Length: 333
Figure (cartoon, rainbow, N blue to C red):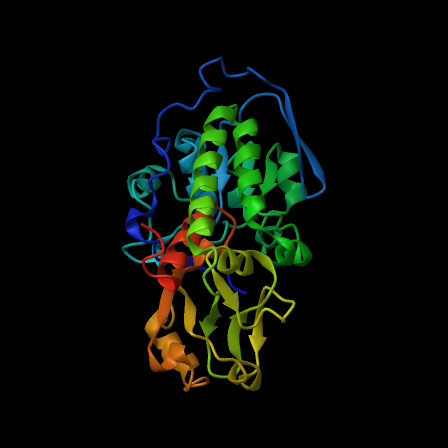
C-alpha cells in the first residue's frame, strides 16, 4: 500500500483546539524540564527524554497534524512535502504553520539517509516503520537512534501485524504520550477529551439505527483495492454507524477479486482520495461497475475520504464524524 497524500477532511470539522499555533510550547509554563525525565515504550523500544525535544522531524501528514494540534509547531525543524494533497489538503489553520516549517523532502517520504541524519534531530515522529528502509536508501531506526534521534511510531504501526491491530484508541494514546514527551500533558488531555466528545456524540447519534452496508475502496476494476475487517479503517466505519461488506477479510488493505466484490451489495461507498491518480469520482465509477445493482451504484452514493484520515492521527476521529454525517443524514446536529 503506498504512502499517500490527500485532500482535506470537511473544512468545518476542526473545532478542537486553539493549540494549533506556533506559540512557544514549554511544559505548561512550569519550566522546560519540569516533570522530566520521561520514559515511554514504543514498538518494543524504551525511549527516555531528559527534556522536551527541540528538533523534531515529522513524517506523513497525520503526524504533523497531531503535532500542530498540540501546539508544537515551534519544535518542528523539518517536514516532508504534502503538495500531492491538492489545494484543499490542510485542516483549518494548518497551512500557514506548514509553510513556516522547513521542507526536507520533495515527496511524502523522508529524504535519503545522509539528508535525514543531517537534520540533527532529537526526535523523529512517523506513522510506520516502513519509512526507515535501508534498501531504499533511508536512514534506519538504529542509525537515527545512534545519531541521537529518538524514533516514535504512531498508531502501533510497528509492523504489518501492528497495522492490522491498530485502533482509534491508539490515536488517543499517542496524543497522551506525545503530551508527556513534550511536557504538555494538560494540553494533550484537553485534546483527548474533545476527541472523545466527538466519538461519544457520533455513537449516541447512530445508536439504534441500522448499520449501513459500506464498501471501502481505493478503486480498481480487477482486482479492486479494498479495506477489510482489520485496522483503523474498519474501526472508523464501525464507529460511524457503517458495516464493512468486506469485513470478513483479515487484511487492512488488500486486493479483492472481482468475484469477491461482486458478491456484496453496498448501500454506500467510501472512496480513498489522494493525488496523483484517478479522482474519487473515477474510482467510484470503476468499482460501481462491479456492483451495478447495488444501492451505492444506482444512487451514486459515495464519499471521497482523504487518505490521511485512514492513517494514525487525530484526523481519524474527525473522519468518524464526517462518515457518520454521510451515512446517517440528519442524525447529527
